[in-house]
Figure 1 (spheres, rainbow, N blue to C red):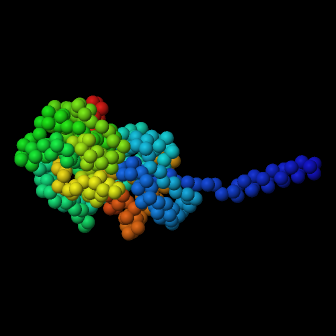
Figure 2 (figure 1 turned 135 degrees about the horizontal axis):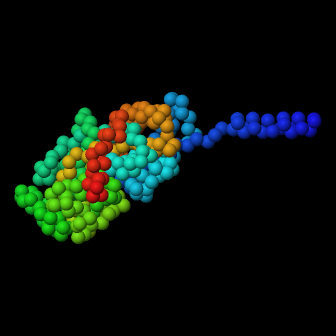
Figure 3 (figure 1 turned 30 degrees about the vertical axis):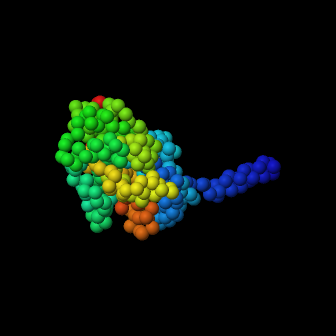
Length: 337
């Protein structure tokens, strides 16, 4: 009997010790590769400490915040619906595509500084002057641009637009295009819809020559090198690459500025801004609410604002799924539904 009691006591002690062991808790945050992955990781490194501190204030003591950059937009979407990623910085198109079965929930919409150029017609963007952000004007949308680069054919297309001549399907179809992932709003979805509306349902996949690049940096490099005549970009992308355009050592080594050598040849309607979304497999409603507060607070600090500027974000507002119904409609158009 004594041996039995000793064994029971030992088992109780073992289970008690196991119960006292601290469970390791991590929160994984994934970014899409809209910029160079190494640059994103470097810029967002301080986010780990800031987010950990903000969540601790609300009773969520994570041992570790993990930040990853997906190999593609789709890879981040897949990580979200599998529960590998808890939090994802997703473009609207990627969120719309991967939220159809309610495995992903949007919690925030990014705010951006408005631009001093915001026109429907391409010619109005082409004054040869830089585009600037208007820091005291926050907007929840941005535009996609189709820009012609310094190649001979790119300059020919730009000259037509700036002379007031409407470009035809044949004009666009003769160009070499650099586009982005098929779930990228400004890099693929909205330019496709714009082309379809202009040219009897003919979109990017109907073009004779297009390449899907692995990032906007690659698109801009190809545009500078003349290997593509047109690139699909977000409206403030040229601002992000203005220095690299003329940097001969680490950049593209062009002699003239990006504003002199590129022109807008197509403009999409406004695109609802990027999301911060969560995986419904791993993030419950209470944690989602805490994350909303945390990211809004972080964006209201100088250090936080510097971090999120990697995506041209200037703050966040609470979002609901219905905000992205236009993105879902766009996906339906692209899929032929």
